[in-house]
Amino acid sequence: MSLRRTPFHAHHVAAGARMVPFAGFDMPVQYRGVKPEHLATRGAAGLFDVSHMGEVRVTGPKAEDSLMWLLSNAIRRLQPGGAQYNALCNEAGGVVDDVFVYRLAADDFLVCVNAANRAKDFAWMTEHDRHGATFVDEGDAWAQVAIQGPRAVDIVRALCDDEVAGLKRHRFVSRDLLGVKGVLVARTGYTGEDGFELFLPLPGQEDAVAAVWPALLELGQPHGLTPVGLGARDTLRLEAGNCLYGHELSDDTTPLQAGLGWITKLRKPGGFLGADAIEQRRHTEERVLVGFKGASKRIAREGMKVLVDGAEVGVVTSGTLGPSVGAPIGLAYVAPSVAEVDTELTIDVRGRMAPAHVVPTPFIRGS
Image (spheres, one colour):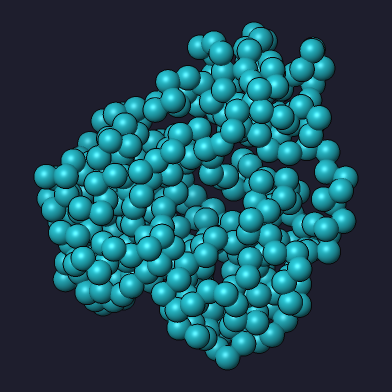
């Protein structure tokens, strides 16, 4: 089966990016290297192609009621022009996916889902809707880029206007930009830095959308904007302590286990799918998610065992050398009894014991 390509694929190849298969797409994993791209984002700004993400449009007079039932957070509180982080849960309280919801109007929502879960999420929402909203898979109708970093505001101000650059966190507006009509400019992101995500409508505008990538790089060049691949996107999100589906989140993991109690409104009116199971499990959870920092050069990776006094107490879900932290870091599920900050751990790194300790997350504070 051939890999799909985003509208910016030719620009990635021309820039010499190393391309890899990811969620059915041919995506850039790095341009100059993970570390320099990571540090460029932390120091100035990075440009990310995230067009592989999926989008589901939810509309109709019952759209709000449907999403109140399907999602863990209180969608009813979301005003038009607002965005909200959510978990889509199953009957057992596990996470089907983590998603961002953008309220376009009273009865019109855009749900951004993880690339690998696009088909699964759409099927889940349509099959478990109680209220009769209209669901449309619009994954092929949007391209998406992210501008992240301390200079992101300067770049967006040059691109748009002061009103857009002054958006509050988790707010968005619609603008015509760089020859593309109806662009959603949202102050959201996944790197731990300040920044914006641009949703670019594709139908009838494919050529104009494809030209956005080089136009943004030219516009952002005075502010240090650099293209960034999936490799640095992962190290950035890990330093920010952000969960990644398939690592920290899964169909067996509740949002409370993953430290996402702040988006899990168990007492919202009408409840939500999976809420009863999450409530029952919260008192008997056998593992919780913690951040850890290594005390040696050995880097823990997903699936490696976590030990305390020689006894296995958990497993690593994500690990890397944090370019901004300057040390090995990671996330792991461990027994609640060893989850306190400063608890000494040992990670079994391919048969070699690597000392570590529990630390608060995020590992660093961005712009």
